[in-house]
Length: 123
Image (tube, rainbow, N blue to C red):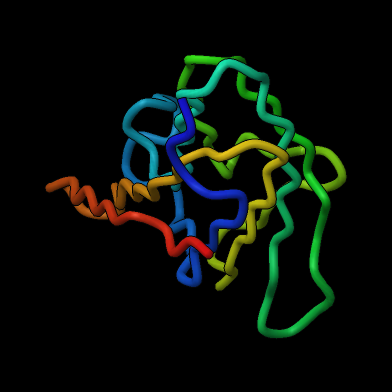
């Protein structure tokens, strides 16, 4: 099954401070790329992060098995470098097989949590 595209962009990225519950990863501020690989082959994805005030970071190498989904938290990225909080960034995903990418953000800075989601732009 060929669902998705090879190139995805999330032009808006910003991980807020962790919020009032920094010891609980489920309730700390974060951004996630939800990646769906509905095909029959493993997806090998290169992720590059772009910033307003420095050179890009990456590529980060991501694998998504066939017929699976991966919820990739940007604050879990470590290699080649961690993503700093409170920094504007954009992300570009390049996959060797078609995938679908959706973006979510949990902003936990206030007592009332806010969750935002949007489909990434594909080409």
